[in-house]
Structure formats: C-alpha cells, structure tokens
Length: 300
View 1 (cartoon, rainbow, N blue to C red):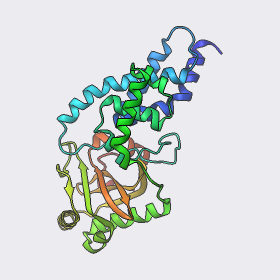
View 2: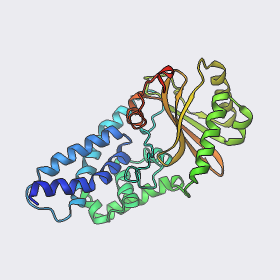
View 3: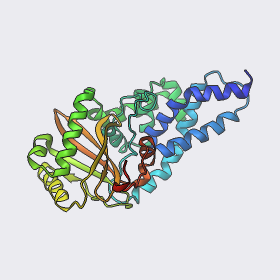
View 4: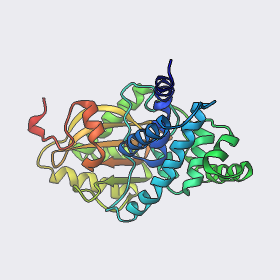
C-alpha cells in the first residue's frame, strides 16, 4: 500500500473516534465534521511516517478544537436564550455515541475551561494516556493530571450511574409526551421531580422560553398553558436516546421539529432539555427523513 492510501486507511479507522471527540469538545455535530475534515487535510500533508497515527490524529483534533472553542465561547455569550448542545441521537450506530457521556454531563462540561474539558474527555472518556494528553495540550504531565482532577471534581455528580432499560426509557418518554401534550397535571406531577428544571433552546430563531423553568409548580403551569394555547396537537415522530438520555423527536407547536431529552433520577424526571433551533436539528431531520422545519400537513 502506498503512503497516500495508508494515510487514508489510518484516518478512516480513527474517524468515528475523532468525530466523537470533536463533538464532545464543541457540542456541535456540524463543527465536529468541519474539524474532522480539517484534520484530514493536515494529516494528508504530513511528511514522512508516523509511528502512532491514533495519537497524532488525536493531537491534531484536540488542538483544532481548542482553537475553535475560543470563537465558540464568544458566540455563546451572544446566544439568545438557553444554549444546549446539538442533540446527538442514537440511530443504532455504536460508532456514533460509543461512550458514557450524557447530555447532562455535556452541560456540566460547559462550565469547565477548555483545557479542563480536553483533559477530562481525553483521560476519563477516551482513555488517552497522560503523556499523550500532555503532548496534545502542550503541558507537562503533572499539570494535565491536575486539570483532569479539577474537572472530575466539577462534574462528579453528573456522570451516569446506571444505564436505563430501553423498554423503560421508551415507556417514560411516551408517557411524558402524552401528558405534556395534553397538559395532564396529575400525570405530570407523578413524573416530575420537585426541583425539575426545563431548558429550551430556540436560539432566537423560533419561539422558546428564554429562561430556565425551575420547580414542579412552574413546570405544571407551563405545560397546562401550552396545552390550552395549542392550535395543532404535537405529533410524536419516534422515541429515541438523545446523548444517552431517554427522549423523543416530535413535530411540535408551530409545526417545527424539536427534540426532547429527559434526565431521570430516582424514577423522576429531574431535567428536561428541549431543542427547537432548526440550525441544530438538520442532522436529526436528515437521519429521520424529515425537514427541520417540516409542517404538520406534509408528514407521511
């Protein structure tokens, strides 16, 4: 095999892992794909042989992500309303989300510095050795160890404790969809934690409440009010895992595609993550054969 073909083979072997790393760093599927493309261009131009392609490519992607995060954080400061990572749905491709990072943990990672986030993901999620991380971050090994320790301390309570049974996840997601659609306060009260929070990401592109809704009483009033005001009943497209959390894709009020993910603790819904921003749903729509802004009357 010539050098060019070997380079391509090495990259394609690592590409699923590199995409996961970039997505976990940036919270954006589209930006992760751009990073992977940029990494390929740099990798294809490396002169000479490389003993460990996986480590070399990890270093390239990590540094590209750190550069990207500088501008991404500036954009987040101007973002309208709550910001939620682009939903990554489980369409039965183990390569897509083959790690234990849930949406809840992704949100917690947003509070870390870029270097802490990189150290935590590389060490605790992708099992990269400390010396390799040190090379990627251009820090010494002891500094990287401290970065990982600090990050781990900040996100300790957000790590998944157990995997929810798929059948139970489906049941909970369907029950919540029906109860929230109908504004059924009795059923919702039995499902929601007392300190439940609701995050909705419209990005200023579509209607979504800008502030986080906290507490079961406010949540019940919200869903009851939405049910009274709806002109068309929301339509459930399918239940699905969204970044490891039970959830569903629906066509909701305003005839827009949205995803809803449910963080369940002690059999109660602790946090609800709703993404309505069409800019973040293109890959979900494409995977399901829909348009991100598909109207209700065009559904099959």
